[in-house]
Image (cartoon, rainbow, N blue to C red; front, side, top):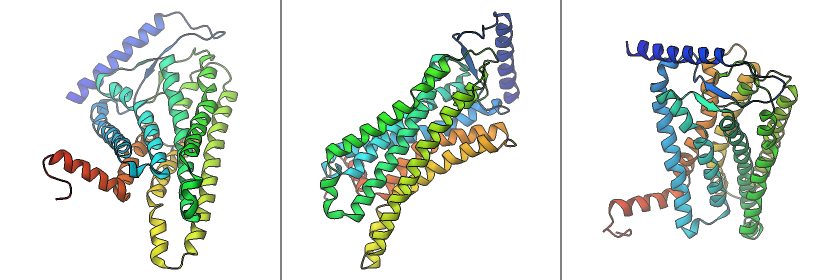
Length: 344
């Protein structure tokens, strides 16, 4: 009965909004107009939105606590001020921005039926998703370069990847994401939206929004797909090249123990790379070629693409990286037993 009531209320609300839209004067397709969109959520599963929001909220809280913990631990422990952990901090910041730009708004949709979103807010959310995702891919590449230098030339690792060079690499990654996807909101802002205002999604996905425009969108779609393809393919190729050099150096080590130890330092990086690119690739392929895939399945995959990497990255690095694990346990011990010395 509760589900029927929720579904009825949801339907009545959208019937009311539809009537209001009918009474409004039609949009002029010859010029851009300010628009308020309606996010539908997951089509066909509206009555389960409240329940779906619970695991999403739990994953978001874990992502927040995990990434903030990594930032706090690395900042507090000077012994962790090394290239790998500095790049990890940059990755944690992008995870925080990526998850926070989508999950709070999504939870408001699920729990409070906040379906309205303005055009400017929609474009801002879309811009953060695209640019921060490009930054995250760039930081994975930077971490691969760090592992390559650390294993292939360990004696000069500290002199090659100095703090100034790490800062420059971080700035380049951020500027790349900002510059390549800044045209997105500008292009979409100029489009006239004279079709339906309903976005059948949980957030402002690029393809879901651009389809609402009532003019030729082939150039806009081509630009977005080409930028995403160029950035993603270049990063993946360079990461693969880095690991080719890593494996070549590992196989030249004199003992099996040394080889396993060297590969062990790359384990966390490989895990998070596989999670990130597999979810991203699966989302892209289902959107491009999965025409028979149900809409709710595609939306779930798109949500996992934005939620799983920020959720798993701090867990993987916290569990697999000994230094972070030891420092987290040390801090927890201090908080739990403040009057007991750490060495006791």
